[in-house]
Image (cartoon, rainbow, N blue to C red; front, side, top):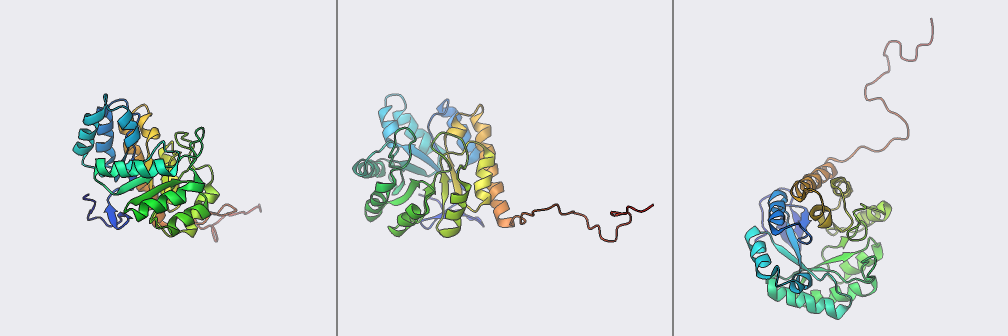
Length: 270
C-alpha cells in the first residue's frame, strides 16, 4: 500500500502517512459512476468496503466493484460490518485480508441491531485477537473514555469513536464526552458514524480530532459528488482552525475596536 505522501500535516496511522483526513465509505451510492466521481472529487485517505455486503451481492456488483476500487487507486480499508460476535469479526477480517491483500481492518462488532451500537463488552477482546494476528486495527467504538483506553492498552494505535449512531446524520450528540476523550488520549482519533453535514465534520476537526469517516451523508445526498467535495473542504478547514487556535469564549461583549479615549463614548452630558 503506497500511503507515503510528502505533505506537511499528514494523517499518520500505524506509521503510515495519508495526505487526506477524510475517509469515505462505498455503500448506497446511486451508481458506481457516482461513487467514482465522488472519490475523485474528495480524494480520501482510504475507502471502506464491506466484504460481507459486497459478497452477498456478488452477482450484481462482484468483480466490477473490485475493478472499480483498483481503478480509483485509493487504499482500501475493509470492515467487518454486520458482525455480531468475536468469532464472526475475526473470521471476516481474515477473509478480507486475503481478498484485499491488506492488513488494515475497520473492526465493527455490533451489539444492538436497532441502534447499531458497538458491542463494547467484546470489542476489546476482538481487537486484541486481531492485533496479535498482525492486523492494523481501527476499531469503531463509542465515545466512552475507558473503552477507548482499553483499546489502546491492547495495541490499537488509533480509535474511531462515533459522533452518533450509524446513518443518523445527527452530528456529535455528546460534545462533552468527545472533547474529554480528545483531551485524555494522545492517539489518533477518527470520528466514525453519525455525521450528516460538512459543518459537523468541521466542528469535530476544530476539537482536535484527526479525521472523519463518512458514507451515508455523502451517498444519500442529492449531489454526492458535490457533497464529497464539501466534506473534504470542511475537514481541511476544521483542521486548519484547530492549528490556528480559536479565541477563548467571553461572558460579555468585547469591542473589537478600542473605545478608551474615544470622544462621546458613554458621554451623557449636554
